[in-house]
Length: 263
Ligand SMILES: O=C[C@H](O)COP(=O)(O)O
Image (tube, rainbow, N blue to C red; front, side, top):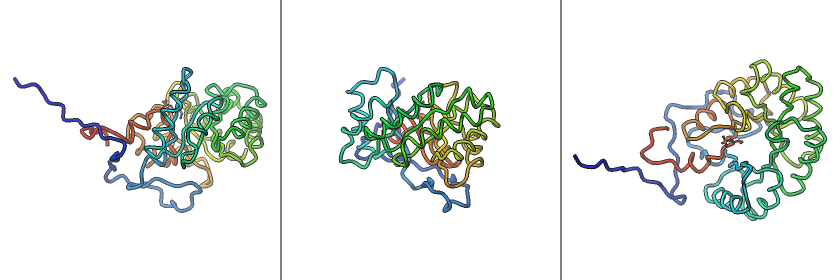
């Protein structure tokens, strides 16, 4: 019996292409009301991706590699821990790829003033977008004013110099808590609500994106993150209303195997 031939071909960055999902229009009719761009079939998915590298063992060489990949593939940003912002800014210098940083990551349980300080330092070092983790336990406890103060302190710390995304860690919350977290984030002056850290019990789901989209005004952006590993998942989340994808699998998402059937 002849040996099966694997015809899958890895395409190179220079001819990287994305396969659109057919019959998968964004189903929100009020598309033009939104502050942040909405993905529609035909738009490059790469431009909606924050390419994330948040592993504890991340080192300078890793940062250099992901920055080179981000430039090559045209991702929206490179998202790193706050201690790597300065190097990331240097590596992305001269390119349109932005620097994103995480704050209070991944637990969200550090003191509010620590989050504010970390955010201010990240801004100073070159971050233009910041994903802060909400005080998950306080949200669960119904300490809504404390949660709003926590987010507000980070918003104030950057004084409009960076977009603030609030990670809810949706897999740890009830639907009511997710909706309340969205409402609080908007009231506190944040720019985005975001699903997950990628370090929790679960990641982004289409159901959560729909819930979050319904809970905030069109002025708020929605970011899906955590466990997004292929183009089909990314586009399903974008079609549900996400305006940004956070993923450590950015290259795999856009540079998929031609023989794959995931899109
Ligand atoms: O966007 C932030 C997340 O850490 C990404 O999680 P991931 O490694 O599961 O893609």
